Length: 62
Image (cartoon, rainbow, N blue to C red; front, side, top):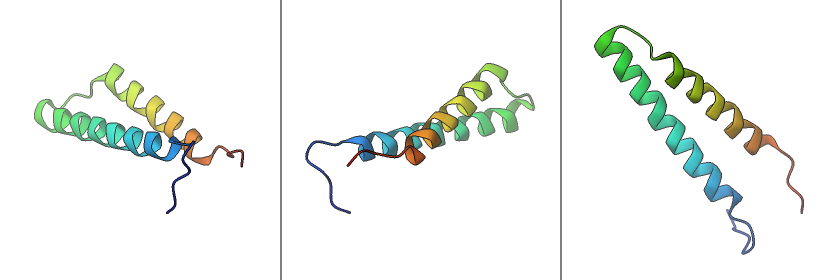
């Protein structure tokens, strides 16, 4: 994959995916430990996943 010198969108998307993956891990870990989902954390996680998906599939200008 060749990076454009003026575009760091790919790097930002990779960082966002890493953050939401880590958030998902923490939500599942907390659920398995306590048996209760943390509502606000789950909502933020879903919002973050949706925003990341929109950023990935948003048409980029060339």
